[in-house]
Length: 102
Image (tube, rainbow, N blue to C red):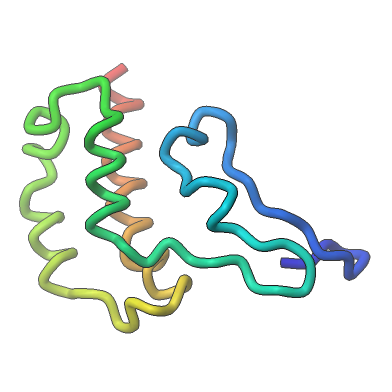
């Protein structure tokens, strides 16, 4: 990724997500590409392990949406954009529900 000035940058998540992010050894900086975390089931498992809420109570209200998401599938699991396009609506829906639940 590049800044407006064309200089390479190193992408890091917000502090609250550091424990879920792949280790620094997985990322490369400079002109080399940043490795994409394409092990989606592994990533989901890491999120599940870090949840402070019981998973069933978190996901139960969204069961049909989750089923639809999995049925739709990922167009290209090796593409960062495809993986993010696939998982983002699911994460946004659960996060919004948690915020409203207060």
